[in-house]
Image 1 (cartoon, rainbow, N blue to C red):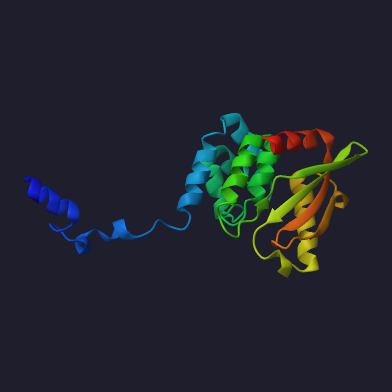
Image 2: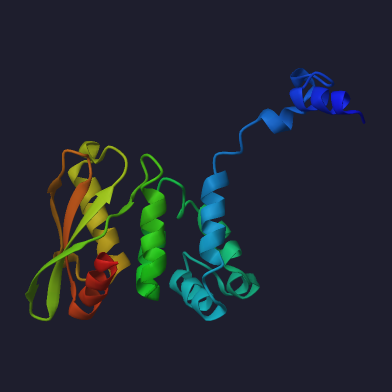
Length: 205
């Protein structure tokens, strides 16, 4: 190929932009970036941690024994959560809670960083530890995402129940403190002090 022909190809004169395959012009599917994020996350979770994650979901309404045994990779586990609408690009709360119980503060931080790049994603901000009482320490969470001002009282009560189960604290220790102007929900949670120490460490990073 001569230099002139090469220049024509580079400029599109030889084939013409209209002849490019359509798949090169189409944007990736909606979950493209999200799946890449989950794949990177999965590569940082070892086999023992995967067993724990699967066990978190094990039960009558969760992963059954056969699927538990067949699921070999963290990517397959994330796929299962996505198929059941437990994990999605606009809701990372469940994933955040599992990483919390796994003790992977580094992955919690990565999860929050990713969520900040996606509009209308429900996730936990970094908490701000406050006061201590009877072996528990107060932590203020900001749950940010969709327009939470439209939540009804029953929706907020349901959210309290979900958070108490996700974080492993009594229901009475989860208090809806209010809504911020940025449409994030301020929730005060009393958590065991050993968990609070993890949050302090995470917040300082």
